[in-house]
Length: 383
Image 1 (cartoon, rainbow, N blue to C red):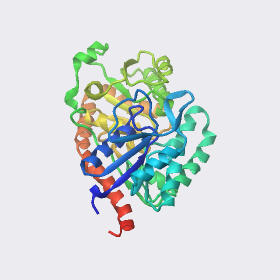
Image 2: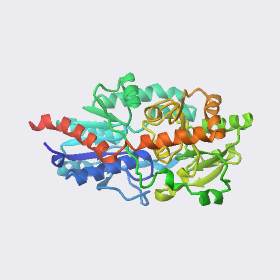
Image 3: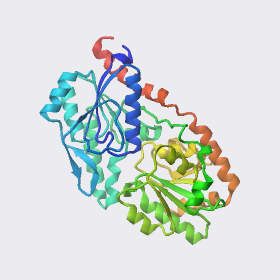
Image 4: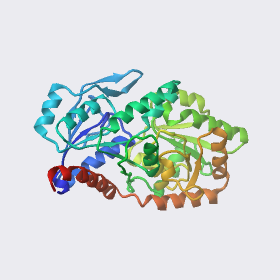
């Protein structure tokens, strides 16, 4: 059996409504599969003005706007029309990309027909409640997700650290790696633009600590702000450059005095903005891979990150940056301070990170997913 024999039904909770690492990875995967001759049909909630045009055929799922986070929609199952579409499409494999209600209904549909199911893990959903003062929901949510994943035939996750976490959580025994790549035409150290920096009020000698991502609390905005306060208390010279936008922007602005907010950037503008920083700080523990961490490395920035899933498989502590146990702002500040004052250390670790980022090639990475599909489908086809 070959990749061109695959007929994949992909269920996503957010295929192109917003622009984030998970969506970009899924669209790159679909584009690659289509180039290899596979058939792919995507089922996801849709909105009138999505963040970008989707790759492949997209079928809209019934959904509702998430209260307080209207940029996201929650799929609520599969309608009679969706079931009819699935029957007519006749996939030979189901891929679910988020543990939501539609994915659960789709898994039931697939299992009733003897189809293999692959789940890809893109974020630590079970950690989200702690950022909204509802930590008591974390264990029940983890159990709810585990019940779904154990009904699948296999899982793929973006990093070895995430694979290890999933195994510790007893999510599944068959878990392989679907890593992430980086677009080197967009992200590279030579995209640094001093004129652009100056337009934001950054002097050439300023050391800009970068935050990149959607401005939502689960990205660790509170820890980032507390760490910058700790650096100020230590008298460490630095500036803060925030790249991104989101519902928590006003909170972040209020808690980052003097922070420079560049807003949402994409494409070449994003590469320029990221390469124009000096140190990348990622305190998030919800990442399964950390696309932004790899992009920062490709731009020649040393990375200080939480020693949690995702970053711990990318950052080599003491070589390309620092991995810090997510214990609090003081530990992060202690790791960041040397990069703010030692240009040789900053440049050396940044160059090492850029060299490491060249190992991540998108086509080879996406073929690993295709190979997993084939491993699951072939026994059912007798080939």
